[in-house]
Length: 209
Ligand code: GRF
Image (tube, rainbow, N blue to C red):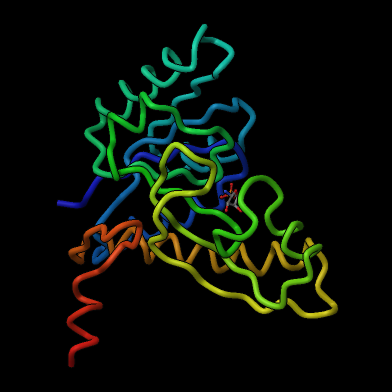
């Protein structure tokens, strides 16, 4: 039985698409079973519909408090019995309600090598800073903004001729690979948290060989 992914989105949904595509493969350990968007105009909604995946639009402005809004999201995720929640371009900060309902079971993809350049427009921040390498990070979500324990990263070089747009494009391609790889790793390898370091036990065995 495949593990069940709930994906939260706000926008175009290319990372969602990468997970949908991976989930269709026989040997991939997980599949997207539900998509939740806080934005009724997100193209990610169309992607979910095309793949026949149930999609719910849950808008913050329809609820008085963040707690009530997240209770609704929690209810939907629980009803689909998700094993992991993936934030794939979800533009809101996750609050206590969701964090405590899914402890260490919410991951986020961010387009920089954290802890550098958290927050919005990370690719442009990195480009403006003049870094020679950037990339993407998948991390567990905690109460901060892009601060949780890092699970995986991929690096891309930044060349003089790069623009914020070309850099974002290169990073996005790596994001799709990284997200699919990390989700697989979480379901096929043992891991534990040491301080804020995510240690994969298989990696440790490899080191000893
Ligand atoms: C990605 O760059 C992701 O890292 C960031 O938001 C963007 C979402 O892109 N959190 P998409 O909606 O998956 O195409």
